[in-house]
View (cartoon, rainbow, N blue to C red):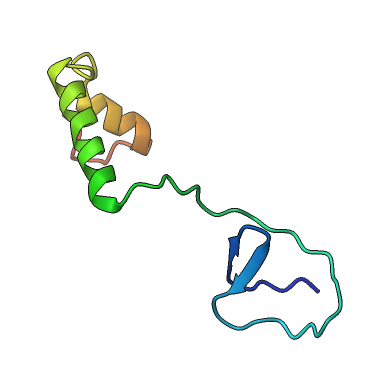
Length: 86
């Protein structure tokens, strides 16, 4: 049976965050999934960089050729609603 435990991988060590499995000193095979890649930037710096990129996109009118209503219908796969068609 597969069990899931929350942990942080630091170098070659696993630091358990919540409940740790009771393994004693035995070695067992594991699969480790890396959930997110760390950028080394704090949230404020990432936010500032994102704002700068969005400002450049706006200045270049990167999305000016896209009809927002048509895009929304395509993304949401909207169906026509009786009595609400234009």
